[in-house]
Image 1 (tube, rainbow, N blue to C red):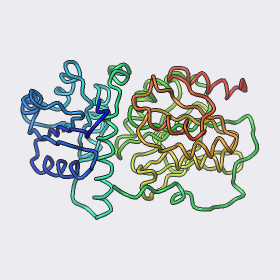
Image 2: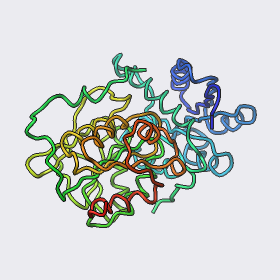
Image 3: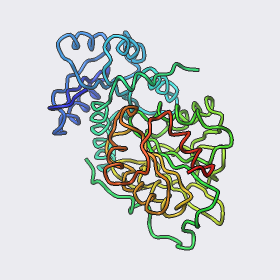
Image 4: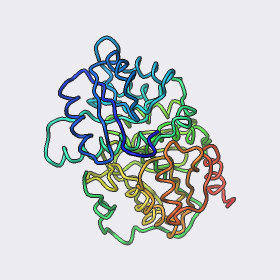
Length: 364
């Protein structure tokens, strides 16, 4: 793990254009140092004899050896944070779900031509993802493995425009909603968290930083493992007990209220706190429309997305929990939320569900 100095990166991709583009993007960031490239896993193995990277970006489909095979060998012999690099099509989403299960810490989209805004967002996402990967506690990350069974930093104000004030949060009632935010390391943390919930759990709404086309497979995987129902969010979905809704990749998700019914709204918009979906957008909508009926949970992840939104939730009467440092793959988002006074309690991952259910059943 890179603690001091600049982050060194090994880019493994059979496309010379992709290698060159990633190298240029990464070297444009002042926190990233040497960027070495390799055309396939065999070439990467030779590079690793003399170059020790803090992060590896890895393509899946390559000659001589595919990325998944190389990833498994790497994790068993020389665990280094690996970010999978993909064209992000629906067809390969299952493959990349396997990559996360095998030990990859995140997924990024291969850079491609597009509008200036798209290119700037791609640059921001790629550099931020690689820097987050360099902060990963690999010991904690590997313990979670489970086999298959630079843009402006905008605030949530750009998504949460002033609306109908009559639909703001009601006074505290017995109907509670759990709002969850996570980033790097969150795919496995959410699996651990959601698998613990009984069928009579409160409704759960989740933002996990994840690219477009992958959240559907992620939700389906969780649905197959959990007692509760898990689905990718669609505009207008009702928040129901015993169901978790995962924000779709590349879309913001808010929670709203109509009478006594809570539902999600899916929206386009710019990056917020450098992300889309943004935890801040979800949490601030929770403060506005759910208020004291909300239970907020902030989990592993780099940066500060969700911290300010969680503070607003707490000030609105919500009960808020942060994952502790010992069980976080990256203790960034929870740390900032704790530092600004947004958190009621701090707990290890395995205890958070119990605390949520206690609050839901009125034992807090």
